[in-house]
Amino acid sequence: MALWATLPAPGAAQEGLRIGLTLGGTGFVGVVTEWRWEDKGAELIVSTFSFRDVGLSVVGKQYFGASWLKPAVGAGLWLVVGSTPDGTGRALVARFPLGADWRAAHGHYATVEVNVNRGLWVDRPDPSDDTPVSPRLIPIPSVSYRFDPQ
Image (spheres, rainbow, N blue to C red):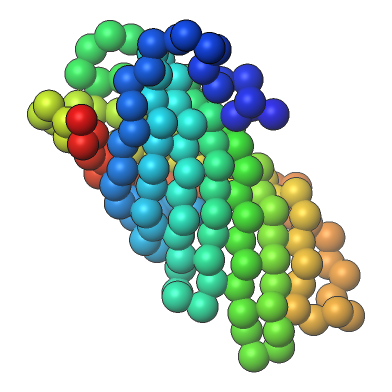
C-alpha cells in the first residue's frame, strides 16, 4: 500500500528514471530501477544471493531536504524464491529502507541504506517443516550506484 500512496498524481512534475547496481540489502548483487518525482521514489530491485535464488523488491520512498545529500525512508515488500536439493522455498518480507542518497555528480548517485526487514510469510522446501516466521526485525545494510540517463 505504501507504494500506491507515493505514485504521482496526474500532472505532477516527474524527474525520471534512475538505473543501477546494488550490493547487499535484498541480495549479494542486484539491478535497481527507480522512478523519481519531486521528493518521492518508486523502486524495483531484482537481486540474488547465490544465483540459485532470485529476489524481487518493490518499495515506495520519501526523500527529505534539498541538498546533494538527501535522507530517505521507505516501505515495501520483498519476495524471495530459492531452490535447494530439497525443493523450492519462498518468503515474503516487509522491507523498510532507511538511508541517504548522495548526488556525487550530475546524473550519478550513491545510496547507503540499512534495510530493516520482518518476515511475513514463508513456504519452506520441506513440507513437514512448519516452523513459524520469526517476528524479529533483521537489519541488512546495502549500497548502490544509480545513474540518471537524462
